[in-house]
Length: 347
Image (cartoon, one colour):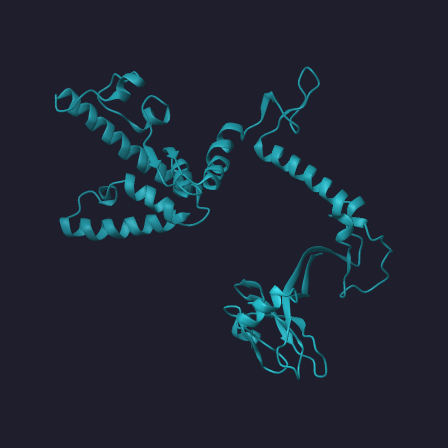
């Protein structure tokens, strides 16, 4: 995203923007590059300082005003045809200023991205004060562009005239449009409530092993009938169930359950690395998974990405390789099993 911001800025602002006044030619090059690098670096921070983005907007609009002024000068000198925007904006002066553009009396710079994808470049162009146009043949990308570029501008603010579910009531007693974010949140919560009513009983609360005290009794379908944000003390709310496919070891003397998991990472953030470690208990035929957390990747003491590769899995008990051909054959005869690895929950 920030790379797209820098690309839009670099395409619309000339390098002369950073040439200090009164410097010699050599100093101009050196100081200009240094100043440009410093500013672009600050511009590429995400989400970015409003002051830096505003300054970038001024750079872009000022450079665009200079280009428009030159267009007028070339037209008046008979070098080019009359610019179409002069009549469109009814512009009569010989000089275009930044304020002319900000007040809508002159056009903003227009950015066209014909292969926009999710719309990163048009989004940054809009953020930097441009008029953006985006296209993409992929219908999924097109929908993403609508949701990120078009709908927030058209429907983002409250509208006392339009019908909605979250705004204040009008003279007829009907709720009005409360803004896109509030409306989406309302219907998202509506869907969540409907889903809970249908499948809430499939996600029973989980007793918190770290809780000390007496837990109140809750029925199995608690999530269906209650607010998920008001979980009674001593319980966790299930968020996800992590499963792995399994096959039986091809070694006739072993026949243990072999997990086909490719990697067991749960979290990879600075100073927090969490993964599942495979434990093969002696005398048993099925592994168990243990959550291991460390401040560094090496601190885990094992490689969470060293399990099944290209469809080949190693039996944790005897070391026999369940190759991809064997796994496919087991699948054809419907002997692929499954095993729960972990349950992710929120407090």
